[in-house]
Image (tube, rainbow, N blue to C red; front, side, top):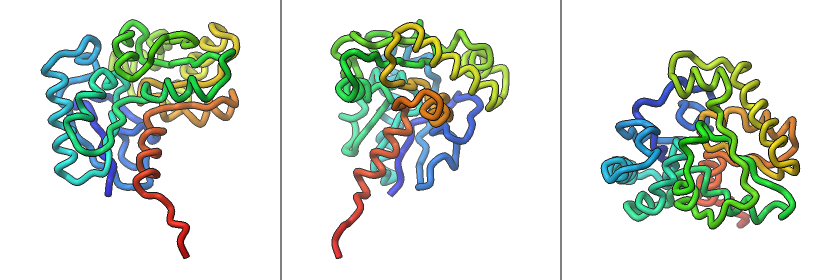
Length: 227
């Protein structure tokens, strides 16, 4: 069975590695299109919640085995989306924050690269199960030129090398802000393309929504060790 991915209708230009890019995964995925954009989840609304839940229900009717969210801000309605269907849901990479916190040393921080630091609120983090913000450092990619024109403004096509440079700058800002950086979490799904670049250079674990997609694929398709 395939994994369903909730995808906003107004999503911009994507590269392979982005969960919304066909061919990113080596197993079947089914896209559930949600009217609107990430801006509908900055503060949220009953209508935005309803649209997400309806799209999730439609994916379930198409017999997907689990559902992931393409935008990190979908964490705002993790509970509601999960309650609307009878299959597993990981609405956002932010759900990995409690796990990452337990996985690394208490002396280390978790750095979040988010699309826009002014848009990721405490209400999103709480909805993702984050009890407190201790040891969490946030850097907004709205400060990076190519990311800004591609994702925030929607005025340009993605250039891999330019975006990679922006992502590296973002991680460097996180390191300078917290000193002992133990893990990086990529809130924005566009950034999942560059997870390997981060682990290769900085030698730290990286969590993104693709982590959730691969995890659900594995837990629902366990390897059989029988003879």
